[in-house]
Length: 150
Image 1 (cartoon, rainbow, N blue to C red):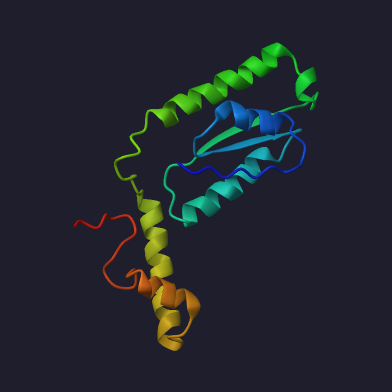
Image 2: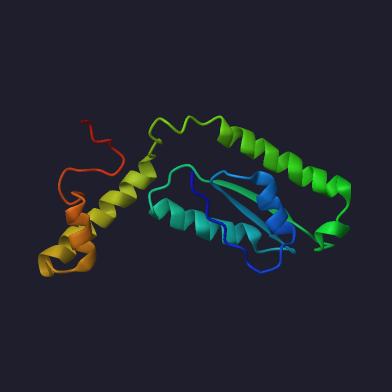
């Protein structure tokens, strides 16, 4: 599995350590002082949904005090570990050999964008996005969530 990590800063602080605790799974982890983490995670989740990802987990933490990892109480660190471990267990239990489920909202978004691409492609067949969709067969009958059988 591939993992993408977007850290808000270059320091290897709390968010970095939480990501390290979590290891490898497809989850949005936010940590911030006060408000902002959940709305940021929602924006990322919305974007991933438009990219066709159906099952997106969000783990959000608020730190209202210390931001230096080494100065955070062990009890607080343990609560981070417990929450992240719980999500990691759920992600680990997924059978990644079978195709992922594509929910209805992702399919609706696909069809909306497909109609837009078809319309734009009729006006300008050299339109880059239309050509990409057409090359993948999505303007026709191919759907990205269906496996091609040999």
